[in-house]
Length: 292
Image 1: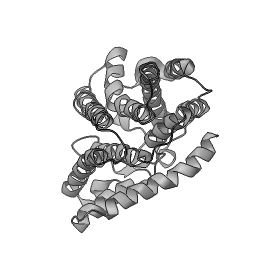
Image 2: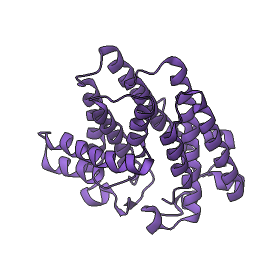
Image 3: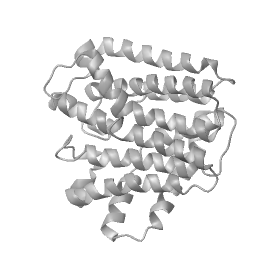
């Protein structure tokens, strides 16, 4: 199956799953509207699509796959809501729309992000067709990748790195955690649901690590070369926030070279897996060539 066909099939299902999960919640209207606003704002759904693509390439379907995919997208969306807050990146635009706090206010936006994060763990804990051991694996890895040892830790390093000249190694550590950890979790969650063996898990973990860095390098390049209309968020934000970036450290050609390196290493990592891994190869190309 080609990536376009795969995405055309699964993206509406992911969107539907997200809507249904929020619809059943008996919660204050303002909170539900804020959660839905950011969940339904679009986006490429790269993380849940990666999870589902891994399962497909390993030859497995799973009745709870869309629930795990939705949980992953909830965590990602929470991180965007909080990332845009005035105390963080202070952004007014996300996915071509006003950021959550601009519409609902800071307090509701913070609580909507909190609600999405905590609900995602409950959603995985209530899976009906996953063994207890695998649910523990999914939840444990989710807590590591989204918490202090992963995304949150990376965000702290990112904040502390503002107005400083980070080394390339320091910058890579920021993005291994801030961007790469949840992306890698998406890949490994698909592998767990597909009952992958330890060799496949290791290969996919390496794939995720390099793909996460490639993703962030492409983001940094687009922040310099893209427009706000193309990106759906404020262009040039990194420079205005005085953040270290790959183009800032390596120049644009150097950043492109580093992007090509990590993309190549990501593809090399999955060569040991059975099958042609065509979906994962196409996803890698989409990430490194995307315009937004």
